[in-house]
Image (cartoon, rainbow, N blue to C red):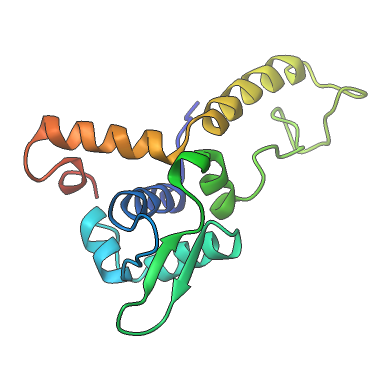
Length: 154
């Protein structure tokens, strides 16, 4: 079993981290800078940031000083919100053992265990702020040298 984020969620989180670190307050960060800073393909940035904009996580401004910025402080932005902005709701409502509906009234054999694991996973993402990830990013960048981990992750 693989528990990992999609590439789209990865890009959304990395772009959000850059906005938290480099565009705090009222400033905007241009898309090319976001792509460069986190080694995200430039063609993907408008799509991912469009998802985040539609979800009310970022706002955009056109023009010479335009770009993207977070709508609210990173400390008030759960990582779960960023992931759900690009992936949709966390709880699928689909049986993990097949394609049928599965709930408390008609549970599959794995329903209770899977629900508990899913709830724990979602709770961690909901309880982790974008500011937490930005701080961890800075700490890992300090530990790995002047280029930071974003230079190694593509």
